[in-house]
Amino acid sequence: MTGAERQIHQVDPTIGDQVSDALYAASLETYDNRPGLVRDVGGGFSGFKTIPLRNLPNPLDLEDLFGFDGVGTKVEIAERLQDYTTVAYDLFAMVCDDGVVRGGEPVAVGSVLDVSQLRYKDDEEATERVALGIGQLSAGYKDAAQAAGVVIINGETAELGDRVKGWNEIKGLNFNWAAAVKSYVHTKRSLTGETLKPGQVIVGLEEPGFRSNGITDVRATLEAKHGPEWHNVVVPELGDLSLGQLVLRPSVIYTRIITALTGGMDYSKAPLANIFGVAHITGGGQPGKIGRMLRGTGVGAVIDHPFAPPLAMLYVQEAAKMSDKKAYTRWHMGPGMVVVTDEAGVQVVQEEAAKLGVQAKAIGHTCMGESIQIRNKGYYESNPARWLH
Image (cartoon, rainbow, N blue to C red; front, side):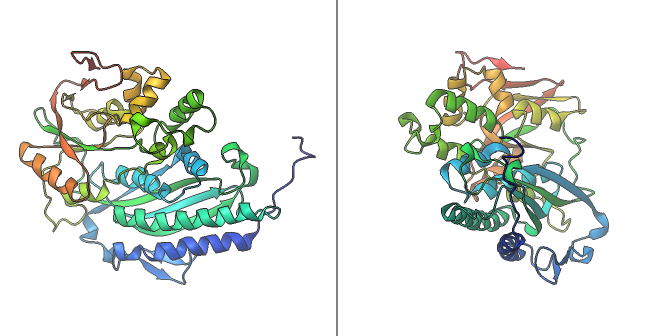
C-alpha cells in the first residue's frame, strides 16, 4: 500500500476516555488489596494519586524497587481466540514476580495499553469486539491485581492505528500491553546473594503453562505444523483443550507466596522461612535465571529432582525439533519460580504454595563452584538422564 492509498486513522478521544474510565473503575476495586495505601484526589487515571510514605511500615528502612515488562506476543493468542480474560495475569506475573526476587514486596502497578483502534466507523461488529475485549481486560486487570496483592495506581491507553497490527489483520482489539511495578524492600531483607552457600535446598514452584516467554517460538512451530488455524486444533494426547487454549493458559502469580515466606517490607512481620535466594524462571530459562541469582557468589546449583515440563511444552519442542539444551533456555521447563531455603524451610514453602493451589517440591541443592547442572527432562531425555551445563 502506498502512502497515497493509506487511510489515516482518526483517533476519537472520547472513546479513549471511556476506556480509561472503565480501567480506572476496575483499578478502584484493587484499593482494598492495600487498604489505606493510596491517596486518590480528583478521580480518574489523570487524577492526583500518591503513596504517602507514612502509610508504609518502617518507611525510613525501605528502598524502592522498580520493574518493567510486558505480555509480549502472547497477546496474539488472545486475539486468535477472542478471549482476553486472563491476559492481565501474564502481565502481573511478569512484573510482580520479578519484584520479589530481591526480597521486595510489590505494592502498585501501572500499565500502558497500546491499541490499534477503539472504534471502527465502518464496522460495527469490530467495534463491538473491541468493547467486549476491553471489558474482559478490565475484569482480568482487577482479578490479577488481587492475586498479586497490589493496587493499580495508574494507566495509559493510546490508539496507534496501523502501528499495532493484530493477528491476520482481523479488526478488533489488537494491542500491546506493558506495565511497571513499584516494590519496596526492607534494607535487612534484601536478597543480594550474600547468604547463599553450598548445601542449601532449592525448591521449585510448578508452572503448568508456558508463562509469557518463548511464545514466538511456540507460534511459529505450531503454525508450521498445523497451519494458520493451529489455535483451534485439539491434540488428543494433550487433553480436550485446543492448542490455543493450552498456550493461552494464564501464568501463575507467585508474589503472595514469596512475600509471605520472606516477610516482605514489614519488618514487624516475621518471615515464615529462611529464604536465601529467589529466581523467577522467565526468558533464559532455569540456566539463565538461576545463574543470575547465583552470580558472583561462587555457588552453583544441582537440579537433580526436577519437575517435568508441561506436556504441551514437550509437544512444541518435538514439533520444532528443538534440542533439550535449547528448550531449557527458551522456556521454564517445569518451575516458574525457584527459592533457596534450608531443610526446615522446604515444608513451609510447600504449605504456603499449596494455599494458592501451587505444587512445590525440593528439586535440588546449591553446591561449590559456579556450574549449573540440570537433570534433563526434555523431549529427547536419554536413559539414564544426562546433565545440561
